[in-house]
Amino acid sequence: MLPNIDINITFLIHSVTILFIAIDPLGNAPLFYSLTTMLSDEKREKIVKNSCEIASLILLLFALIGDLILYYFGLTLADFRIAGGIILLIYGIAGILGWTEAAGIRHPEEAEAIAIVPLATPLLAGPAAIATVLYIKAIYGLLYSLISIVANIAITYIMLTNSGKMLKVMGENGALALSKIMSMMLAAIAISMIRTGILEAIRYTGH
Image 1: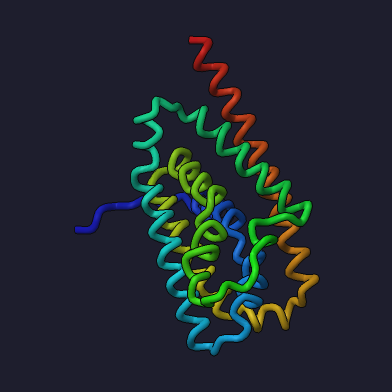
Image 2 (image 1 turned 90 degrees about the vertical axis):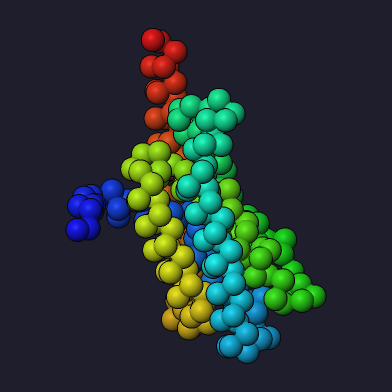
């Protein structure tokens, strides 16, 4: 018989949502399209597939053994929440101000090179996404982090392969506006992580 797995829908939705915000496929779609506009649809889809595979491997690795790394260095969950929150806050503020890692990127000599850098990492599986995966695992458990990764990589794959169609429907201004909103949400989530981490650290030192 299959094991009885109890999934909390609220926790699942929250987990998938915050990782979606951290990965930001909406914000990355215009960049990806601009970097691959000279390629055929078949070549573009191949690059997306490779990028998503690499990004998923990176995130799954941290979901599985990231907490062991924290333990090895003697870090507590409160330490990670504060540090992770600061990272997310920086990314959120940077996104609001219009600065991203994509800002300094130019067309590479070999278009296929973007499958690994910068698309897979750091744009998809960068510090913000990694910190979020570890946060989800710490708060909700490994199952939720794994489901969130799979769901978001699938969503990202669909959005990037249809980046041209998305831009036509939304327009560049629409995509930019949504990206700004997600950056604001990311900053708000970061503040919540930092606040929780500080309160836990205070309680820990009080014992």
